[in-house]
Image (cartoon, rainbow, N blue to C red):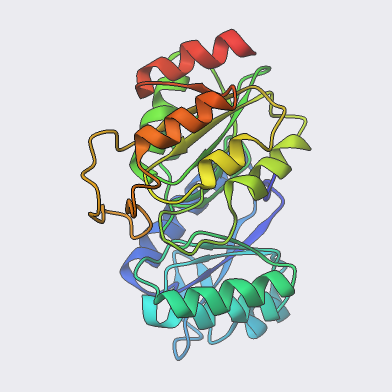
Length: 291
């Protein structure tokens, strides 16, 4: 597993809000199903002493870590407080932070991600669905019932789009192709782990035999990532019909100065020798041929 397994203890920051409560329940139901640790504690300043679905809540990460063994956190805090929460997690030694929160101010995200990197903490997101390693751990909001892990031939998935991720996972599962780990890196202009960062982990993961990379308009992270790996890789770029100079649903998905549109991305990927699927339903056939 590339970011955690069933032995990883997870803390939820923003545990007492509506989203935190809902997803603590789902993450721990999955942990119970696979025999994992799951969420061991929650944090919400000013609400220490409460419980959420049997999970104790503390006022700070420091207090939570004094009582519980954990190496990762999942953020459901409001955008204005998310930067501080990421830095609190990094300062207290957590290895991974999954930032589900959207609408984090760009400057806050830049400061928090830079600080986390200095502390050796990997930030997934923000504005992402999180991580799912089938049979091991769920950190975030991905629907776990769509995924499965096969005995052999599992693929890793990296995506900037949550809903497209779910669609592709469903297509792979229906085709009998298992997944090693699914990572949503987020659609904001400033993100923590990039395609290259995640691919580097997949390269060293014995469970992963191939990669599906799901990109969208804006920037050049997809081309940078696809050129990094020697693993068999199939890409899909969303937004072929997206109008130029218009921001899409993701803050980072904007075509500027004629760069970063889907067509140019696809042409550059194909020039690199990368297989590009024209629609998600073709991905299982293409990746199976390469495994």
